[in-house]
Length: 178
Image (cartoon, rainbow, N blue to C red; front, side):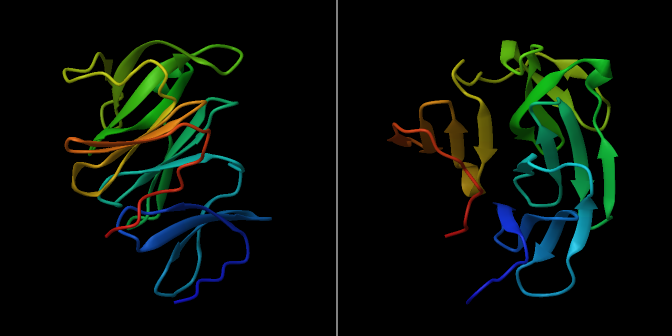
């Protein structure tokens, strides 16, 4: 099948059903099987997209500003995540309603320990489970427990005991279901 969009694709949902793309008038969500494009945001160009593992929601994060929005496609709801007024870099999803984050400096670098942010309660706390390596800049949970870890000079893909390392910088757009 051929998919043509009027902008450029930023991310594909983990279930392979939706794409987020940018055009001159904003960021849009499109169902791959057809239908009208849904406006997600007019004011978030160049945002990094983090899909929830079940594709039910996504986070748009502008690292250079520290601005973050949560979008729920089924509800058409977009709201700001303010992290209690502090500046945090979103690294990826931790659980269904939690995100991995790290404090961000004024030069847009993540510092300090990895924390878990609850999108429902706004609570920030240290994780109870294993931390990711310090070099990790973004985490992309995939289907069936797979995980992609992105750093400045490498991308790792993990699933169970299998590990695959790409020793070059890269961009993870999303997972395609097998």
